[in-house]
Length: 172
Image (cartoon, rainbow, N blue to C red; front, side, top):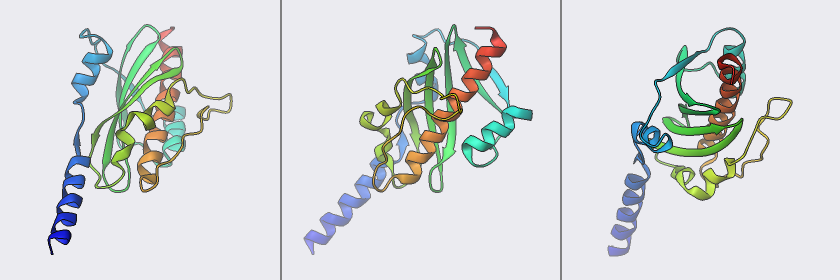
């Protein structure tokens, strides 16, 4: 009986630890910009931008626009995508058209929390968009976290695409 109780407590503890705020989005921005966070700007999901975002996400974006922060050739995107049932909030830093950093900020699912580990998120470092508009790196999956892996991969792809648009429009 004690073995079963221990096993149940271990499972419940793991699920509780998996969900949560790993870093508040404001703290992430503060870290990335060393306390000097620029004013947010917006990208609207209309016209070609909306079509491309829908293609990358495999569904229409949840809102009509998204915020981003930029300084020079660097932009930061805090984006959300559903893993299996709930949103995963991810911070993505793009520098000179390459992914500098991906960080899972808030995880709400009961499974797939392993995507928050550096071993997973570091796979995205230096990824770019290919000439065909795809992510330049193959991202290894995590057993039991397939939908969460796909969500973060789509968000990283989307951030690179959106960065390429704002760089053109901002003249950087």
